[in-house]
Image: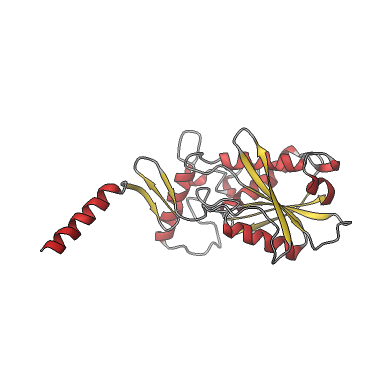
Length: 259
C-alpha cells in the first residue's frame, strides 16, 4: 500500500502545482486560467551570425524602440557585391500566438532561402497574442515595413539595405499568420504607398485565412479541426463590439471591403 499511497500523493502534489488550463494547445502552447501563456515551442533565440553552411550573414536591428521590437537582416556573402539584390520582407507564423523570428526554425529557413535565392531578407518579429491581441502584429509589421522603406534611395541607417537591396524588387512573404500579415501589408501599401519601394510580388505560404462558412471549392475540414482553428482566432483577436469574429476582415478576405 505504501508505494501506491506515495504515487497518489505525488500526483496530488503535481496537480496542485499545475495551473488550471483555460486553453490547452500542447505541444504548442497552454494558457492557464490566470491568463499566463506557457509557450512550448519556438521560444529559443538563435544568435545572428555568419552561417558556415550557407555562407549567409545575419544581424539584428531594432525597428521599434517604443515596443523594443527587432528584425533580422540576412545577406548572402557568396554573391556579387556589385549587384543589387531583390529584397524579401518575411513575417513568421505561429497563429499570432507562438514562434518568433529568431527561433531555430526560422533562422535556419531564412539562411537557406537567402543562400539559394540570392536575395537580401528582413525577418520581422512582432508582438504576439493574447498579451497583445491582433491587430498589434499587423501594426508592428507595418512599422517594420516603413523602417525598411526608409532605406530607399540610399537613406536610412542600415548599410546592407542601402548598398545592396533593390527597392524596386520587394517581395512580401510569410507562412500561416505571417502569410496573413504579408497579405495585409500588400493591401496597405497599395493604399498608403510608402515612398521609394515597389512591391514586386507576394508569396503566401499556407496563409492563415478563415471564416464562419466555407467558400465554394474549399476542401472539407473535419469539425474537430474547425473547432481548433475557431478557438485559436478567438484567442488571437477576442470578440468585442469592434470585431466580427470569424468574419473579421483581418482573418476573412471575403469579408474585406478593401478587396
